[in-house]
Image 1 (spheres, rainbow, N blue to C red):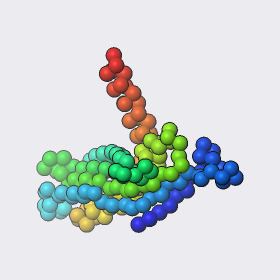
Image 2: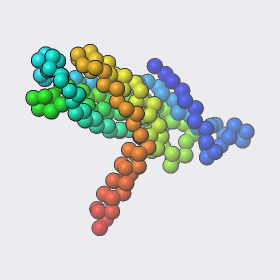
Image 3: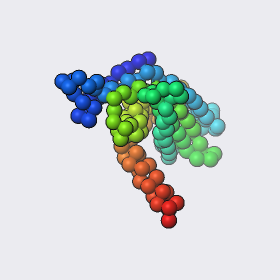
Image 4: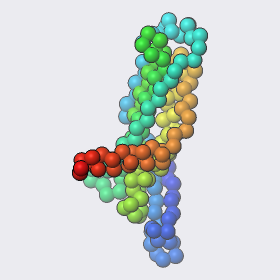
Length: 169
């Protein structure tokens, strides 16, 4: 699957001055790891009197592809648990990745692109995988709400700065 999203910015030059505009391309998308468990099935499927507590975890990772200057592997990890202990309905873990080509972007724009824009492009596909696997597991499809990747990135940067301050003190 290949998709192209052109992103133009003033720092990358304009078409009029002969500079190549910045571009972001999705080269491929893939499921790296998928796990679905329903430890109390089939009994739990019959005794659902009320909606369970659902906990969702999100993580984003990015690495440069070895041997490439401008290709990056971005992975979105979603972890969802419905219920607890003997009342556990299901636990689903998904690591969904994409290979992105980022060309002609200023260096200071790479981290926000890799940790905000790339996961934002991957999220709808990962969300659909989670919905399908929970539905196929005998439950209503789990439709994860949209995620604010910019906020997650800002929190991660703040944590990193705090960690560096503690180490230097």
